[in-house]
Image (cartoon, rainbow, N blue to C red; front, side, top):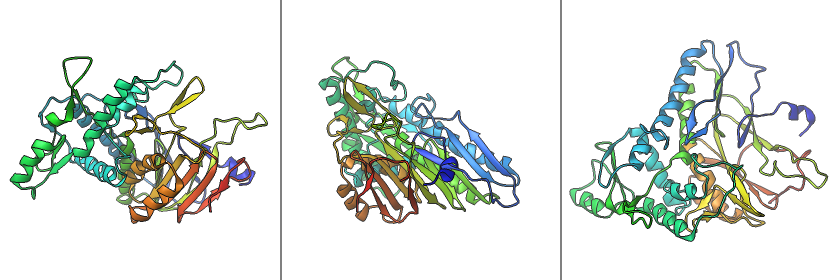
Length: 400
């Protein structure tokens, strides 16, 4: 990548770098709409919306409304959100929810099943006790490893998502009775309610009140919101557009250059210089990309490295070895699936396992995958225009 291309790329998000080229647009007014105070899971979404439209205000408002609607429904810290109300409900208390929330739960269960539970929205307690929840994460404070007892409690609660069940108009009375007896979360699509049954709770060794499994849709909601914005673009007067929601990018109707962040950018090279920010650049047109990696939220205790991607089978951050995946980028048409799958791929542990998964799952929804390992090897699976930043990267090699 030459110096001219380097100067055109600007970092504006944690995991994605957007190259928003305003030159060569049509006669419409170029607009750079920036909404930076929206919250997803307590973390700034750093939402950036670039559009090329003559009358930008109505479209900008619709984009803003699409993003804020998702946030108001799934933000686990917002006391009026669907997810907050579910997480704080009593045993067998039906919570009225929006149909969008139910759709996200259905997509989540599908990804949970296909990934063998690697994507797990009920891992909230584990994420929290490790200090990576939105309420607790602060890399500057001193951290401690959770006790084995707390990790075991978190594992038990995470396992509850496996038994979420959905009721619709075709569900028989016999099935409903069976679900009520065995399900943990009972999702009624007819009446738009979600209920935490008695099976959703475990004994609390620290208090008389039982602990209930809690849901966090932060691993899917930003990708879903980016796709809603894409649909707004399609139904508007916008000639083209790009939305970036906290590292989940969706492009509309032109070739957009999107830079992928170098997962080793915080490291020092042998010569003392900082690693370059950019790993490479992909070209997107009517596609989304979501990236996930161990570099996003992490801290050290002594020389031990801990990150926010929790393996719910061990109750601990995914172990990182030389050939472990440290960054996964997923490109496709379904923003929600790309978002949820990206984290799952990191948890798969090896490039070979990812290749096997991608060959048999989401073959229509996922167009390409970008993987980077801890030994600085990378692999491009599928078909996506990609340029490696080979003039600045040090020590990277491609897995053929």
